[in-house]
Length: 139
Image (cartoon, rainbow, N blue to C red; front, top):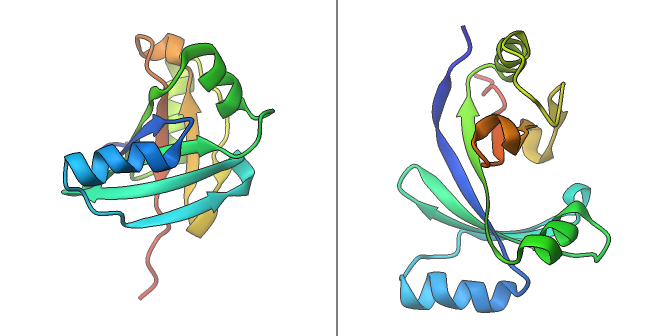
């Protein structure tokens, strides 16, 4: 049976990545692990590793993306919680069998071989939940 392995990241949506980084780096002393342009999601993401997970600061790169519309409607703040799972297809099947409302019925192939899918906030008490399956490591 598919299971949750860990919290992969917590995503924070911002309209100004530079200002957001100032808080997380300068005030909290967190180190920037990297910046990544994610064209498929029309966003720029800053990764701030901590423990076995990370904070991701996400800034939309266009005004017509879903992230930009979310930001305009709700303002900056926490966007979603991402859970790493061992079998995303199995987890989605399990959720469908329980009539859990999904945004993605099938896994989406992301950067670096990751697979991901979103669970609708209505199913999770108002929280947008992302599921991640990391690529299998080849020996």
